Image 1 (spheres, rainbow, N blue to C red):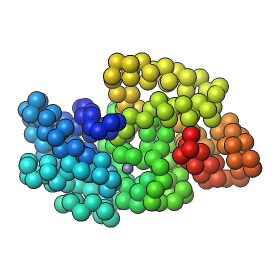
Image 2 (cartoon, protein in one colour):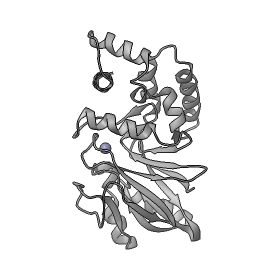
Image 3 (tube, rainbow, N blue to C red):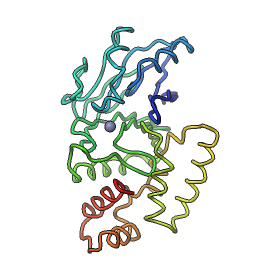
Image 4 (cartoon, helix red, strand yellow):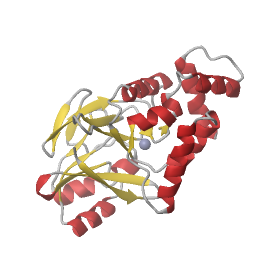
Amino acid sequence: MFIVTPISAFSDNYIWLLQGADNQVVVVDPGDAQAVIATLEKTQQQLTAILITHHHSDHTGGALALSDKFSVPIYGPNNCKFSGISHVLNDGDSINILGHPLLVKAVPGHTLDHITYFYDHPDTPQLFCGDSLFLAGCGRVFEGSMQQMLEAMHYFKQLPAKTLIYCTHEYSLSNLAFAKAIEPNNLDIVAKINQCHALRLNQQPTLPSSIAAELLVNPFLRCDTSTVQQNAAAYASSALATELEVFTVLRNWKNVF
Ligand SMILES: [Zn+2]
């Protein structure tokens, strides 16, 4: 597995730094070049590549400056609205990063160009999921359809339960407040709130999460459970016949929660 550490940026972004052998590193979604440069100067590590999950500026804003300074490639989706991609990726591609294979999966929804990077390590699989999946939440559906975002959730649900997930925002406590509103009697959510609250009191990230943990607390992965269905229907004041209808109600509800 990769040794992964967060670089904090802006108010609540994490730029994930993946470490390989010989002090070589890769960053995911460097919205802020200076934050990455400061870390590299402190640790004396050598940047060898940049991975982009989607075009939003808080994920791409520092990529060109870093690419120029360190002469490194920028990997990103084939339909990226950010024009700086040097190595274009398609759904299903496998790329070699720091000697390990990363599987590229297109997960449109938050944006149409959103991709994730999955390392299928036998003991500790790792997923770099950008703004598609958060601890107890998922990204807003800005460009794609609810159906596309639900299909992304289905992709995440079938990954190995022990997969560690590296989200790019510290949204956990607000997401968990929403999750608890939907499932007040879910003790896993209560436990996760306590755990995340303690971490934040010590200025620690609540991430990475894991697929196993998300299956217990994330309402967007739990649209097929009866409590979530019932409370989504109560909020919408109508019967919800399909998982897509439940997901859509939850996503719209979260936007105004
Ligand atoms: Zn975004």
